Image (cartoon, rainbow over all chains, first blue to last red; front, side):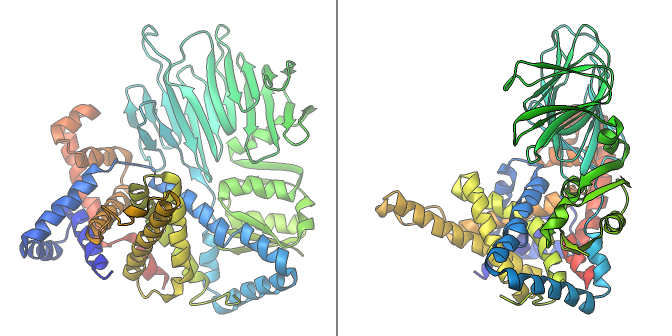
Length: 386
Length: 184
């Protein structure tokens, strides 16, 4: 189908024409081409109509990202490696080693370019209003008004409380933070929320009624505004957390074994209505977690700051297995992990890492302390024993 | 199977990721239009990119790769359509009614136009982007001003600035060609 290249060129002209950005000489070329036959003009009109008919979608980026994740999993990622390992464990290792050596040997300067590919995350989020309108909040430089009551800043989304509550209905918005992102939110009642990577919060534009209820997937830190008359309730998977005014962190990632609530200050009560009638009261420093695997609920005293340090741009690990640590980092730096030596997964690591540090430095620190060796290939970090 | 470093190796793979991210959504949207099913479209789009990945080292320039991926998408759809027809036992209707080459090419051109538009618009700031979107939807300056609650002059200024930025961006004709140049 040779004609296809013609049409791709036409598309470039058309886009430039729509945006009125065609350079003079190309515009002339385009006009001449078009003037040569009325069939072309008719066809161009049809294409323009097709462009106009399409819903304006802002989610191309997300489709690209999701598509790539799946694709990489199929062709380059772990699944493939695992398959190969299963059938030819002996061969795989030399190949990977050889590939790595070759790369270093043949492209010494490209190695640096390579490592730049994995970078720290940033402030990113997608806001979805109740009417379906979506906004990408990633590249905001100055304040912008989304609606009369919603104002977005470079890293915070602010809700202004309305002058009057009468006539207000419960209208839900959704804020989604992708992998490699974080964002803050100030709700209409004054409650502040820090959303971590790969997390989603659903909340009303204005709290109406006797309680303030929000829904969380992923991880967030809450600083709830006091309001004795209207309890604040977070629905997070099987956890229901009810508070009156307090600060705490919640973790509820569907791909992680534990869901948890860690209380920093104040008081909260947690319920798991689907599995138990019990009400758990937490005091500051308390961490309540539910283990999806053995389905047990455990309460422990912890250094709470350690569990919510991410909101201040830090990671604090205290004797955590390497596997958990890399899983946490992967959400922020957006990479995949491949273990050449499985036993290193269990190796424990303690330390404090700064979230905005370069990925290379972070790996360097872990390498030194845990006695492992990392190598980076595309977006995959290969972990080996040293 | 043992060719770990074919072509220019990893370098090429990086380019491939860029290519994937630029073109996957368009191919997916195109297939959605034809299959009318998001899931099928998604799987076919993935398959199309696996095909192109396998031959990635053979392409001399992006134009060829682009043309190839859309053509593969078309072939995959036709195969899928035929299989479906057979599965559903509709033997009599094996012709592809509204799927002539010409119609397909027009849709490809539309998809490609949208892709370029979005790539350019995505580089703009939020408010400007909204203005451009509203403009594409056919709203005039006065209407846009009313919707966004700003003056007509503000809309005009922002539009003018946006076009200036876009002109700069588009002159580079696809960031991704630029990307190749920078990396070579």
